[in-house]
Image (tube, rainbow, N blue to C red; front, side, top):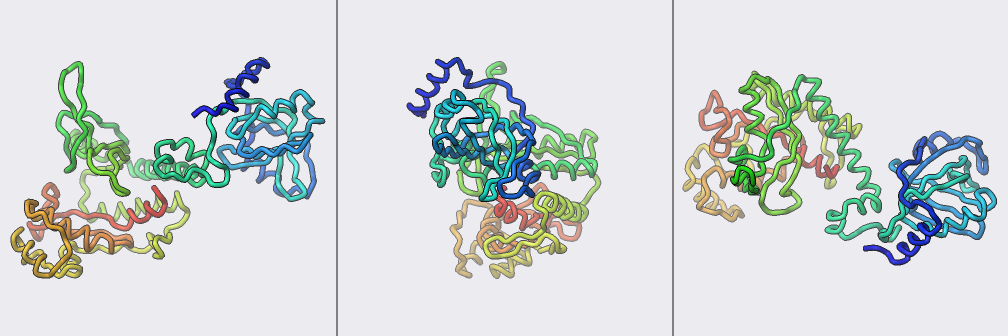
Length: 411
């Protein structure tokens, strides 16, 4: 919403013949570089080094013929010092037309205050963008979680940790690409609109193609097109792309999210487990400079060799149910009831779905440390390759622990 006082100031700026939205301002420094370069200055020491910097005003403290401001740029914040005797009376009066939220460019010299704060002594300034909306209160930021998600640009201004998070996320994705490309994977783009959605079990979004006069679907997975590229002769492919699922919302489910899928010919699931372990260890180390992190009072450690946990064995350990014996849906349901397991069973579901409910309720929350869950029953993995020693099982693995790492990093 436009702030009335700010709008009045904008009108006065136009009356003075000032362009409040110029296109160009030459920047040669940022707040982090300036603080690092001049941190060794003594108290009160001035330099003759000229710097040019631009950013958003986040604090304004006029003190008669002198004014202090805090400026926020991409790398952080830095203090500015304006003095009427230096920039001239007419220019100094223009400071009254500036508000918190405005973007300005300044040129000046660097000094360290008596309180040891690196500060820019301003020689000249230029309004680059007049802000008309009121920013959240400077000390508390934006607290309404829903508003933060709907107006992310305000959240980025108000919450520095959110701003830094998106930089980390970009580094993370860059590391993913780098590792895959170093291992000869080809990045591709596949269609978002499909005539028949597939590759996962989810409800799709429906849209309409006007020219062809036909309904189409937003993809729910990257899988099928990537597998077709393997058939076409590309041995290693991957895609980082948006997928869409028209289902419920929770902290673990979004209608639109980014997915990475990669496929390699001539590798079995044992080779892929070794590859995945090295893959995740590498990108985590490159992005976060550590392979350990605390999450819910537990240390998640990616540096150790990952355990391989058999699906059937851990199911028996955690629930008491032997999937080799309870080999029909009816037997499985009966065993669940006899063991008084807390599970809301929909008896219309198949055996695989019920097993998956058991897994999510009793097993998944306990697989916190990095590991591979292997040898899934064919009931829950009907498209996976059958296990060579047991046709009721599949050569499938599921990496665990990484989800908790991403949650801890808010990725």
